[in-house]
Image 1: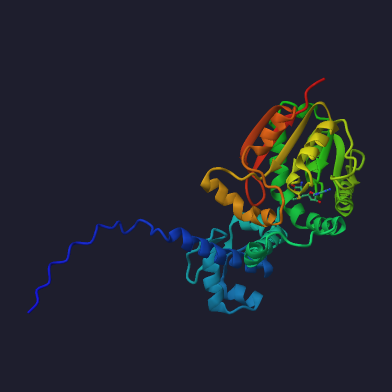
Image 2 (image 1 turned 45 degrees about the horizontal axis):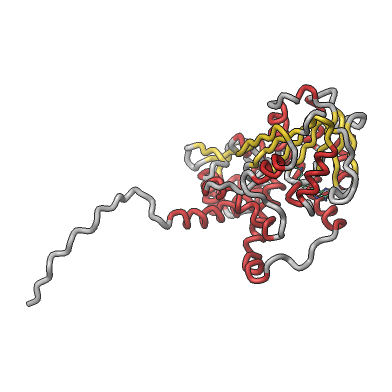
Length: 354
Ligand SMILES: C[S@@+](CC[C@H](N)C(=O)[O-])C[C@H]1O[C@@H](n2cnc3c(N)ncnc32)[C@H](O)[C@@H]1O
């Protein structure tokens, strides 16, 4: 008869502490949540949930399977998009954020922008293997192709994001600067649909200025300026920022998520300096790659696509450093500014008074 030695007790385990693999599982679960949101938007689900409804009623509207609809609604509730009424069977309706941003006639609908971002992120994931094997894409689009794509974006997703997010952040940021009440001439460089220039002109009655964009995109901005009744103070100028004249004598150059795309960053910064009036202000809002891991995790997935395409995405503090080294004064930096998809860094720099 063999005798077994008594087994040692297992090391004590805190059963409620997450397993080290939990961050990997969370990444995978996030992907399914994104698919669910995309599908809900594609089918206009939030348009049907202004009032509490049971899954059976929604399933009838959308011609879906009733039980599956129940599980789907419960998932969206768990993700913070829907409210649940605990009667049996459960009834669901939009939470205020869904009513405002996800219902197609909501005040700040962002559904197309969210679906666009979803597609780009998924495509980037699908192409990652190719990028790793072959590096940068071999074909670069012509400026006409770029203009066409940006004009489409300006009509839809950029307009939705400017209305829902960017205009408020831009106005609040600029209003916090001492120069704000004295601003008279604005250049909204690469302003897309021009809604930031329009919002600023509404806040500052003495402000006039230019939205500079690729020609077809400038036409979208011109249409919006006209519709806002601001054609006497704002105009849209078509051109290529890399090669065409951007004007001069500006008190403020607002430059949001544009420097990623310029051919020669130092040369562009010099041209911006020359375009400002003495004492004029450059305000650049764009993502930089943070040093801290948690902040980087918010920025890097979104900008991976751009970096893989060879665009500039600067390191934290890099733009402010370049401006300080090249004759700009009063350079300030504000990190974590609220912006579409990921927070950005605002860099504020001044041209010296003569
Ligand atoms: C990411 S969008 C940003 C739009 C807007 N500033 C905002 O933050 O909502 C970049 C914009 O820069 C414009 N852009 C990029 N390169 C340009 C160039 N070389 N000339 C003119 N516009 C350009 C694009 O047309 C596009 O509208």
